Amino acid sequence: GSLLGSLGGGDGPPPLCGDGGGGGPGDDDPREEEFEIPVLPQGQRLVIHILSTWGDRHYVGLNGLEVFCSSGEPLRPALIRADPPDINVLPAYGKDPRVVGNLVDGVNRTQDDMHLWLAPFTPGRSHVLYLDFGAACRLAMIRVWNYNKSRIHSFRGVKEVEMQLDGRCIFRGEIAKASGTLSGGLDQFGDTILFTTDDEILEAMSRFDETFQSEAGGPDGRASDEELLQRPRTADGEGDERPFTQAGFRDDDHLAQKVTASPSVDLQPDHSMEHIPGMFTGKSE
Image (cartoon, rainbow, N blue to C red; front, side, top):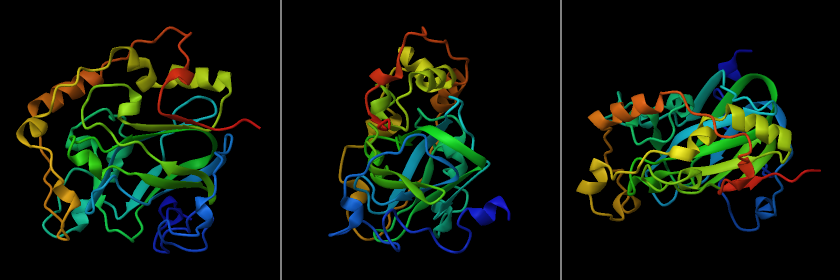
């Protein structure tokens, strides 16, 4: 069948890990047991269940997703979709740029709406991302860039997630909240899930990984216009009515985009990925 048909087209999301049906985390749940990350899981279709946000009751979002295979090379999905797809499914929207394709556009350390994904979040409902790589491959790493629009709106980021590869549970846990700024190391933007501790694979990934290469000289973190104008508050976390959210465009966003598009400088080969904080590491067998 078509790729679209394979990505959850119409039959509803697949069941959660260790679960005969849908639903979020609950009491006496078999999914509460200790979970061990598999080593180099193989498959074609990655499904990410988003179970909760960092506190926002109305919206959920991400900045980006990066997937690397066992050769060390980045995997670009042949197709990506989400359910719900984005906030354009809500009344009063229709042209918001924060669509799911932005998750794999390679621009992740950003606060630019043109590179973010945002969807309505409804507690108790399913919120699922589907990625199809076009062919089976062994996954070595998944990096999740959490929603980083601002300090306030970082609470729209994903918190508890479950990931399945061709129906097999490969990750269950919490993704770190982004800081809402552009400063700091990788651990300030989300989490990196490792499915291997093999030194050769880690070294190969470090050669292909533009984010890892650019860690030596990250951008300075100026407070965004939005942060300067708004005082921290419980914002979207309270109340039952979904607040309106509007994408913004700033001149310095486009300038930053040109800067990040410039070629990265390779780090010395003796830099090891093991020292990057915020990583989940799979156990070797």
